Image 1 (cartoon, rainbow, N blue to C red):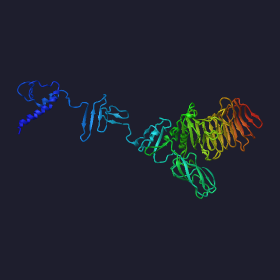
Image 2 (cartoon, one colour; image 1 turned 90 degrees about the horizontal axis):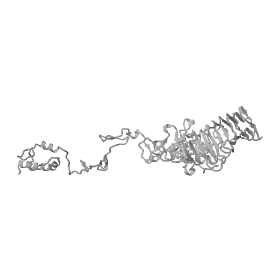
Image 3 (spheres, rainbow, N blue to C red; image 1 turned 120 degrees about the horizontal axis):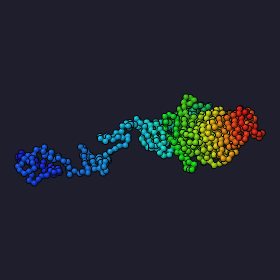
Image 4 (cartoon, rainbow, N blue to C red; image 1 turned 30 degrees about the horizontal axis):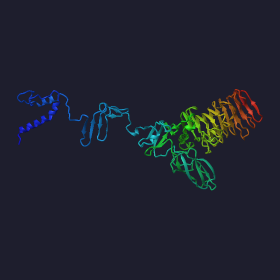
Length: 602
């Protein structure tokens, strides 16, 4: 067995052998020839012990390098599994760390709102929401939002306008699986009922289901049963397929029925504003801040019509605009029963091509930014005899449409030959100002026609704006008014024709009611301003107050037939060169010329 001394010598020899390569790397530390390791000095002579502390101090006089380690990377073994590798940086400031499952670079900076602590390396976001319930996301567009899982968000906002028609700049509410307000009913079925009074019925409001605002027209045949039914008006909103509606109060019941018919919702149109996200959540478009105002671009309007590109170079915005009008029309129950309905559909500055006309629902205003700032161009292909460009109220409902109005818009007609349709038509709207600062360039149509007056006597007003017939194309008259209504044109409203004098008539008055034109309303550059028909059973009473004529106007008021006294009144009228103030067709005579200071009746 080796002695204790022998074992000690062996251990010392092994230690020295192990550190010799390291010692060789220490600058200025060499072993001269004949040096005996173990002495306190580097010299010849008897062996003398070196204290271990002295030896270590000599070893650590300068940096220690380990040549056997790969200096391009350092590998850290995991205590249980995996390893991390730190590699030399290829570019200053970009050292690479390879983790067990991936690789990347060590960050040296961060972009706001993320913050990188340069001392600790901690990444934080002190201004970020810490939960999805704390804030609603902002998404680039409605199209993108449909591809996302937004289940945890109560609402969101789309920035939009990145692409035309992307439904931009809108606010949406997560309503889960609730039906969309802007998905109107587009098809129905019915049960026939029995014992009902035969006839045609218009504008009935069946009750029930999950929505509001559905109106139907239907026929009760000779056998007392419903034989046909169709959706009229906007189609309502908020309904669910298979909803069953009945004819009960506050809507009138169908008279005479022993068993009332029912209406079933069979189909809904796809909403153009609201959307469904990637996992089936319904996001309902909402008016910002509850203002009841929606923008046609939120429903996909493009507004890319240009004069140079014409109809062929533009997108038809009719569907988007009508969707906006439908959406703002949906309210809660009947206003007469304490509910509400109606709102504003906004047309931003720009020009939209519109084909096949528009319907303005009850209590809804289609409003632009300024009379010349927002323009709707009618398609040239629209039927010049059958398609009125804008209908104020649903003409097929046969009931009143309170304050279906236009405001701050330009309407520009289409077509290339004269037709019998009009740019604005109504048989049922009732409002003090149905048109407010609206400029109408009628082209191949008339400007305005009002007739019948379903819902009873009331008022129809035009406040400011223009009617501009095309001297070569527009039919006469430019405006046709009848029905037992009170018609008012005021605030510098005018009919004006550029170029050669137009041989047509500005305003033709039928029977019933009254007509008043005041506060600077006037006609320019046409043959007759107002054509009054005294042959009808109840001629209109006409008052023209504080108006001014025009040297390029032949007759301000022309009385075609019948006795006119006291049907026409002029007060504070400036002839301004008008050929004749009041002309009688029956006697081919002018009964008034020149200025009229007070009240004159004819």
